[in-house]
Image (cartoon, rainbow, N blue to C red; front, top):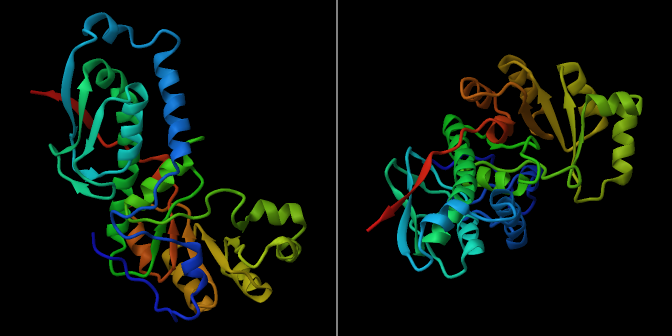
Length: 309
């Protein structure tokens, strides 16, 4: 994957760009906390097994039977979620051996084996669907993210995600975005202040909203304001903010906004971003492009489990 161009920085005085985004090197994505994986896998297995377990496998497969199986990519894509898949199999049968044959963040070709599982056949069969559901969903997000990143090659813009995630699975989906070469926006409502039009309306105006936010924001909490027009951008620059979200602006207006900001604060383009439009948006010079589709509309990467030998 081509390395993305980033704005020049003074290493002794890093900009807010570095604080608001944290793109990992390929194949070195910060891991999902183990306790979150255990919670999610436990819930998924409980949903699948109910109160009586896998009645098909119990009825048809001898308890002593052992097998080897491979998880195989049915289409080209970027892998994410190997640790979660392994946890699903081990939660069913701790004696199973799960061997990753690639790494999260790697591009794989259709037909490639990405992991192997060995041990009792019953455990492999019972854990199969939960493992593939996580792995396919996360790899689909990573694959779509990589497509967006490729469209911005040569531009300063960083592709970032949003909070439009599957309830309960945000950490998994944001991890998958990192595996695809993107970066994370705020994780939740608790780690950054983003003042949108409804906040401004409820607060009684932009100045009131910004002043109130500044009173509670610590020195490590960034404040971003959403604007729809260039006139609103002028107001934000006059009042002061760390970043501005340029919502649903045309490439022409985005370029004007970038010129107006002139590097004083971080610029983020958002709204209506697609694979057809992202290259033109990136060429305007914005720092960030947030894409809700990365997590709310990514197709699952087709993966299968094949018994071998």
